[in-house]
Length: 396
Image 1 (spheres, one colour):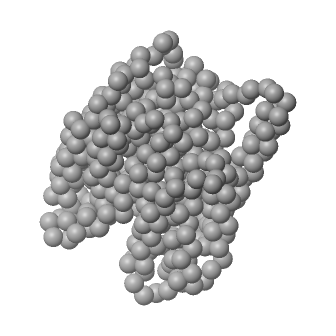
Image 2 (cartoon, rainbow, N blue to C red):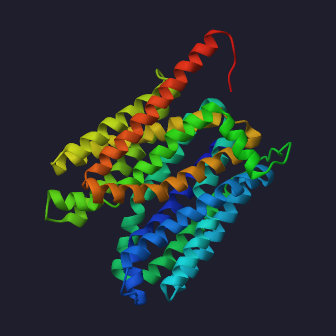
Image 3 (cartoon, one colour):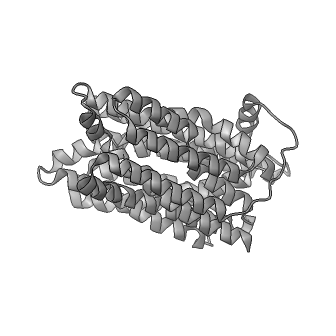
């Protein structure tokens, strides 16, 4: 069946592309030094990484609207081939200003993973949605794990610029696979709407607001610990801190990849129950990560955290799909991606501020607070929904 073919080609394409995306991120500070920048390297590194997410967040609703009008495959090609060009430009940059401009352009064109998920959602039967989202999220997580190792190996033996060119080649391979291996029947948008109308339509839906909150919290908390985890590890040990930090980041991706593929097998619980339980467990495990002074326990809690992280991600996306009609899913996921991109901008700033003011472990406690608030909002929404349905009234 075509939906299965789409799923596997898009999953493998997203896996390959995510290797290319994540292969170069750790090496921008070293790239700036290689260019000759001698001052404010940390500031420029943060700016160059954040501006990509900011630009992507601004453009995501636009690309989502175009996806509903012209098809998701076109957006897949636009993003994939566009980023191949920007990665080549990044590899050829000679100063930090050029790098900033090219990273901004890369953010404006970003969206391959989002387009892949939208295409999977729009071509998969509703009863297999959990299975399909679990599979593609597994491949995305696996790409995130392998990317830094792939990039680090190439940088070690070839240098930074050749690695940038290699990443562009990887992106090209993933894009060709994802685009030419899939088919799509475009459902024409009945009525053309503006971005403000799309945003209003989405935010009027109470269910979408709640599910958006869960996914956005996931993104904010993911990036909250990025500035402080290396420092927290250094507080716990003075040996092999860089290696241990890399392992602690990667172990979440490993368990998330495993968990994403298994979520759809939990037949006894509804997606709503999985989402609520996962949010609560994310909060509890975040508290434990902040309290422990043992690297072993920190690693174990982060491993288990990856499983419940997958629960929030997969169940949240399934519920968002169920809340949106086929003719508007591009716009819905475009706005969702915008929220998550902004979360990637806010998270490091908030985590860095908390680490500076309250200690490096405080970012974990701040993450827990976000998860508990999201769980409380979701529980209240479900409770009120059941009351209204019990009275025989339908709700959006």
